[in-house]
Length: 346
View 1 (cartoon, rainbow, N blue to C red):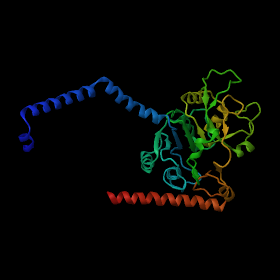
View 2: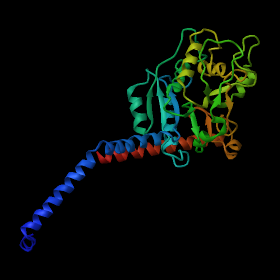
View 3: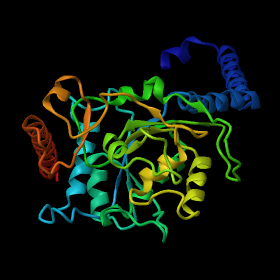
View 4: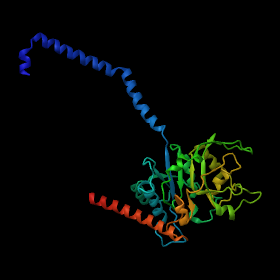
């Protein structure tokens, strides 16, 4: 620096200083100009909207405080079932989503203890508190189903384009995120109702599920009091939906009109009533292989992806029983190791 000063004239230094000052003024003028900010704001605003244009999917289940009165010795069976799904959908490399951006939502009714919510949150699940939707005229076949109508809150989650719902008492064998790209989960136009209705229906809708062969065989629709079309009964333990507040309000209007459907299977019969295959919003069949009630070794070897079966209850097929036991053991080891690591860091 001393050498620089000694080798330059005062005139040169003044010119250089003036040039630097002009450059600073020019830079400040351009940077503070409104158009500069508009360009910057535009880049900030368009980035999130670009992200919003990508698919927004979620898996979901529901947890209530009810236990299994037929197996009272099993402690918190449904909490453990929800933890198993969390592990299988988010953590197990053999069954988790191909995209880790798909969250697993656990809808919790008001009676679910905070401790249970915290456990599932720490496991990685997204906790969604929901309202109960029971009505005085609803009389479930089993007392533990008193909170299942809260499933309908799924339709209020319009931030998601598609939600795949599984009852908590499900076990996954293979990844199921491919279901979101299935043609059966495409948006459909609502048809013109055959009967006049004052309820508002959405222009488009989507609900796809699987047949319930037991109900179709042993509880066919009663002539003159049908709420579903024969041999077209959907099981509400595994289905894909497009959230819609308009549809949610429509379901509530059905709830507010007593005896519109047989309430022994509350949310399942309501959905079959609202989406009967001869109505304006027929449900779509997902096809085989996604989910069975029970199942056998041949089903598994044929590519079955999941079953609807309570992990704590016996199952007729010994091979499937071993697969369920193995899934539970893997889950327990995984979360136990995580707990040990957390304790080691504290």
